[in-house]
Image (cartoon, rainbow, N blue to C red; front, side, top):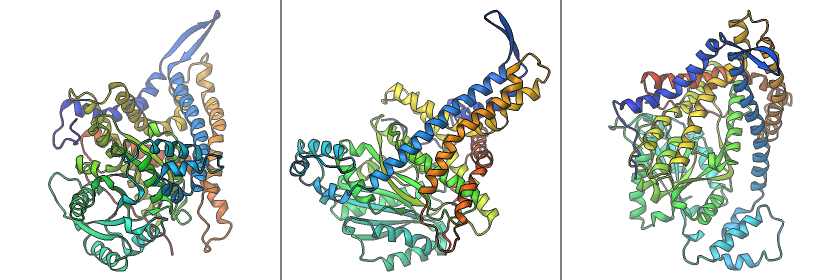
Length: 549
């Protein structure tokens, strides 16, 4: 088994190189485009000589690749949305119940059925019927639901607990774990005390663990909080004489709203997944709880992130842990729960699990939503700042590039080389792309012309802005798909807003180029610069989120 901890203190030279690599490439691309624009070569095609600017070729290649990706994302958006809607129509309680006696349940479907995804369900029933006594039954599964709290007040946490109570699941199989911070002070304690009082007796149990401040070898973040609570919860489960193999742990933020079908769906997938202890289960996180209330730029960013999660659910080989996810308690105990050394504990949990299980690890998509709040503070300016802090925290996932490279190059590595290498390349590519694509698409077409204006024979240089503009017009198909899909997925419009608000929900998309540059790209460069100079981000900056009353 590889060492799955992030190094503390001074890094080795090789580790520092890979920490710097995303920033070196991102800055390298931006700097190299003007330099390449100084180079013009003469080529001959069918006897016709022409000039070709190297910078123009580089820009065109980058834009062309992103054009293909944009079309693919439009397709995946529609596909993901349709699958999400079909999944909502499944009676997961019924299907979970049918796993109690799969052979008898399978016989009911011998004449066929028009239920959504019934073919896969029948395959699962057939598989389980051949494994009597070798899989957990629905009535022996328990859920530990971790709700992390910092300074959130009761009004933020209450809808989260209420959503759990509305689940189509036996509440006597759920244990609510309130993981809160001593750093949260009096507000956190008051919230926890009130939740404990008002929801006592409504679940199998509701317990709370206070994470002490200033523990050694810990960053200030969710990972240490959840890990502290996880260790306490493991002791609780042992005292309750519950088999940890039968316990699934779901992590929720204080503002999360689980879909009513989440727990039966999760339990179903847990049972039918053969290698369940070497898997995590990822629902679709939709930033839509307060989407009608937040400023336009926040809506664009929140909707874009929601669609990225939908797209990711359609590509299981690319799926990673993000925000709320579930994992078996036995697996968490074995790997010492979550990392206490990074502020991006969700995405990093994928890599910890991957290397802990020597590459024999997967993320199972749950195509059901967990609603989250979009960024909203008490003023527009504070909302803009809070949004940037949230996106730059996500962008700090670039720190995993060095972590994966270290384990990939380790002599003790047992994970297969090629699958691990391709995952690392995709990880590096995603962070570099986030940094460079917006400025290159917005300004790249003009760079060769401004740098090398005296190239009269170089047609590409002079026509590049027009060509890129034409590509962007075709790529608008993807934007239109996103706009339409986002509109049909909106939660009901609050009565306090007039119908004219619908128009703003469409017009907001003109802000997309601005948010791409000033949030996505800028936050990526910020995080990669911190890694480049070795000034690490060790504090999880909480995000202002609220729902207007």
